[in-house]
Length: 591
Ligand code: F6R
Image 1 (tube, rainbow, N blue to C red):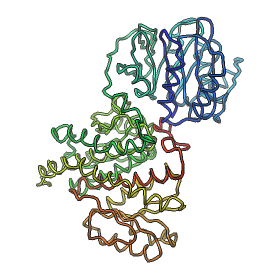
Image 2: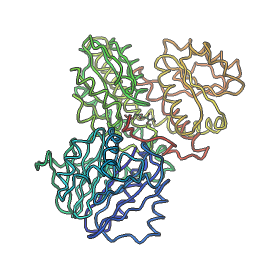
Image 3: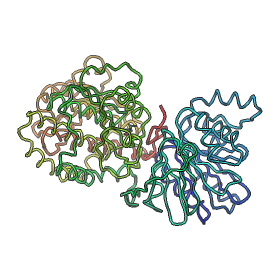
C-alpha cells in the first residue's frame, strides 16, 4: 500500500527521497510525488506510473534547494491514480502525504466546502490536509492534535508547514517510524527504506505527534512532550537489496534455507519460546491470503497431532461475523507485515472479548507485534517481493513447532526429541530441493502458455495446493484453482481436457492412495499431471518430483518451495513485473 518517506537535514533531500521511494516500491503503488521546502516556499512534483516517471519529471524541473522533504507512493483508494490525486497535497500553508483511509472524509469535505474550501482532488488526503490547515494558526502540534481528534479511520501523515523549518508526523493504525541519523532525521513507512542511512529508529504510538529538526526529535501526546526509547534494527542493508538476482522473489526463495536455519535455531534450542497452546480447548487461526494458507497447514497439524479443535478464518470475515467464544479459546494471528488491517481488527476483536491472542509476525515494529498478548517472531528479514515466499514458509515452520510442543505437553508425542533433531536437517534438505531449480524451470516452460492450471491434494496437501495456486495466479496472472482431490468429480473435472496441467500434491501417508485414484481420473482425461511427493513409489503419470522425506510435522516445508519456483518461473517466462504484480500491495493496510 502507500509508502511514506521524509527527510530533514543539511542536504537537498531529493536523492534520499527517491532512494526511499524505490525501497518502498514493493508495497505497491500507481503514482508518486515529492514536496521540497526551502526557507520561503514548498514545491510539489507528482507523477503517475512508475517512480522513473517522477524522476524524469524532477530532472526536467528546477527543483528548490531546500533541506526538508516528504515523498509518497500512492496505491489508489479514493479517486483514480491521476497526478491531481497523487500525494503530496497542499492546502494553504499545509502540505502532507498520507497512508491509510479517512473514513469521515465525505462528511468533513461537505462541511469544509460550505465554509468555502475548494478541493482540487478526489482524495480523502486533501480533506485531512484541509482539516489541519483549518486549525493551523502558527502552532503545528496543536493543529495536528486537534485534527486527530476529528479524523476517523487510519492514517500515517508526513507534514510540512510553509512557515515552519521542521518536519512533522503522526500515525494511527498505519505504519510509520522515525529514523535517527547524523544531523539528519527521517520518517518512513518501513525500516527497509532507511536502513542504508541508519539502523536507529523510534516507534510511534497512535496519535503521538512528532516534530523533527536535523538534530532534535520531540514527541507530543495531547500537546504535552513525552520521551521515547530508541531501538536498533538488526537487519542489514544487503538483506533489503536484490544483489545479483533477477528478482527479489527469486532471491527470497533462495534465502529460505538460511532464514529457516536462523528461525529453527532460535526456537529448537529453546522450545519454551514457542507458546504453549496445550491448555486451550479451541484455536482460531485468523489471517489473510498466504498467511491464512499457512494457518491451514497449522490447523491440520494442531488437530491431528495435539488433538485441539482448530478453525482457520479469513480475517476480513472474522472481524465482522458473530464469533461464539464458549470454550477456552486462543486466537492466533498470522501476519508477515503485522499491519494487515483486517488481521489487526480480528486481533482487537478477540482482545475486546478477553480472548488470549498469539501473533506470528515478521516485522518487529508492527502494530500486531506490539498489541498481541504474545508474539512469536519469524526471522525472515525484509521480504520485498509482493508475493510472500520465505515468510510464508517460516509461518508454517512456527505453526509446526507450536503443534509439536502442544502434542508433547499433552503426552501425545513420544518422539519429541527425535523430531526436533530431525527438524535441524530441514535447511540442508530444503537446499537440496532448491538446487533442482532447473527442473521447476522446465515445468514452467511446459505450462506457461496454458490458461488454466489445477492443484489437487487432500488434507494438509490441499492446504499446500492453495498456496501453490495463489503463487501462480498472483505473479503469472494464470488462472488456477486448488481443489480437495476428492471434490474434483463433483463438478470441476469437466474443465480437465487434453494437456490441462494438474499439480498433484501427495505427501500424507493416510490418504496417499485416495489422492492417487483422483490423479488417475484426471490423467485418463488427458491432464498433464505434475506430481510432487515424498514417496518414490507413487506412480509417475507425466512428471514426478520426489522431495526428501521428513517427519509429518515438517513435510510441507519441503513441498511448497517447488510450487513457489514454478509460479516464479511462469511469471518470468511471461515477462511480467514479478516483484510488483499488477493491483497488488505488499501490506494491505486498508480493508
Ligand atoms: C500472497 C501474499 C498475501 C499476504 C496477505 C497477508 O503472496 O503475500 O496473500 O500473505 O496479504 O499479509 P500479511 O502476512 O502481511 O498479513
